[in-house]
Amino acid sequence: MPKLKPEELESRRQEIIDAARTCFLRAGFHQTTTDQICREANITPGGLYHYFTSKDELISAVIERSAAAAIERMRDLIEQADDTESAFRQVAGFFYKAMQDPDVDNITRLDIEIWAEGTKNEKLAARNRTAWVLRERWLEALVQRGIDGGIINREGVEPKGMASFLISVLIGMRVARVVVGEEFDTLGAMRSLFTMQGGRMAAELTELGVPAA
Image (cartoon, rainbow, N blue to C red; front, side):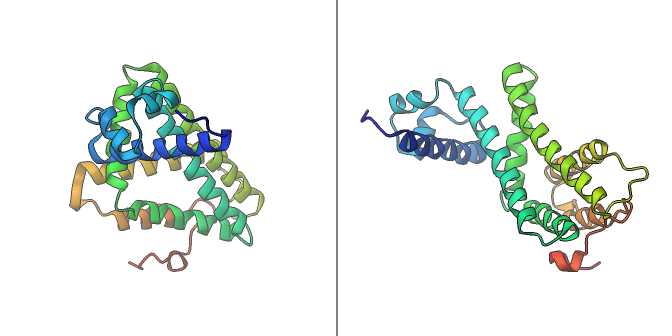
């Protein structure tokens, strides 16, 4: 293949990761073939293996890319916020919009497939754990910022514990959407999450565009 500059190689690698993610969301990673990924990425099988030596390596790259994109988006929201309180509102709005994403159920199904595969593939499980730990640490830093800024009452609130709780609730709501189907009240669940009193941490729902009860 033609010799490319380092930035061109990285750009092409990201294009392949995006193409693989599209295929995985469409059919799951077990059902997705390398030929399908090649067609989506407009690359030959030989070209694909120049970037990724196996489908497992490509799955790991998709996991890492998804985590990095989510954290970058949340970091951008906080940097745009005027103060700590508005930062919490921005993040609450981000989670609400994420739950409304038309692809959220397919993303969850792919996550479930990856989690199940991780019980047999420790390398994949380790990559997946690292991706979720990054999210948790980011939330932990946000909770600490809330405590320092007086948005969250220091008494009885432990940043790591709160971050773990938020991760578990958000994962649980996503899985519940898939398991329960149309009967699952996504809006009600999100409203309940962000109106729970954690000291003074309570998002102003109307400012997030969330309909009132």
